[in-house]
Image (cartoon, rainbow, N blue to C red):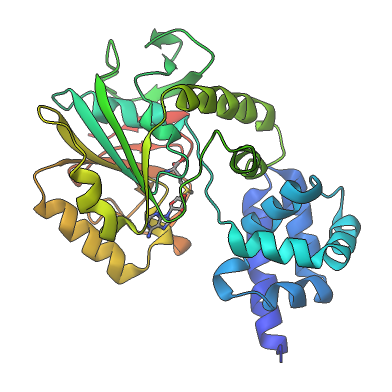
Length: 321
Ligand SMILES: C[S@@+](CC[C@H](N)C(=O)[O-])C[C@H]1O[C@@H](n2cnc3c(N)ncnc32)[C@H](O)[C@@H]1O
């Protein structure tokens, strides 16, 4: 039995998402506001497990099944008429947005490590952040890396140590609760459905497709499971002579607090280098956490030491100190 309090709490979450998402996606902002005011849609969501009610998941599932709803009325109709498929999609899929542009934020930290590098990315999704050496960059217009269809533009502030060339990567190993396979049309369609409609949508979809083509030619090794449980298996795959680098970006807010602390302790105890790009405070010592763990900027850190503030998707890096 759904109570008014539960409905109001969920509506409040959708209103907050509507406000936050407005700059990047006016359409999602409007749809979230419509959900907040729609008792039937809220009740559909309240019939799902608590972890499956978030706006990004509902909106991606709608987009995956039949495109982005034009307005709140269409969303409401589709929730009513397609409830079984929608419920199934939300239950079997997760928010796994894979943004290769984050490599522009990671590169200055990765380039500071003696290589060759064996990247072990936890929360890798489809592993598209495991190819920092295969993408081309423009830092304030200055090119770095190979030419090609993936060009990551980044503006900088402060003394960002932009490398002349990307580091050598000899192993691409990922761990994810539910790894996605870019050669599977459904998984690729899900990754595309996770991109928000709006002013930067076309650029993001082009980048996603181009990065997926690179990953399809040279697939990563992706292990299914929890980051803490599978880390030893992933590190066991690091080839001799390579520097193991544990890497994660936009993952720790999804991990429950005590598991997150255990993961941080584990990584600190291992003979590895550690590169993170996460919301402030998700790695201890990187600032005050924002509600939910995200916030307007992420913090790039190396071995737990904060190096830079970055745009969440990597388009800006401001070096600290
Ligand atoms: C927002 S995505 C980020 C993907 C990628 N790191 C990027 O930045 O493009 C978060 C990923 O973390 C994964 N994830 C969440 N909790 C996890 C856990 N406990 N263990 C392993 N992966 C996890 C999710 O399945 C999802 O693919």
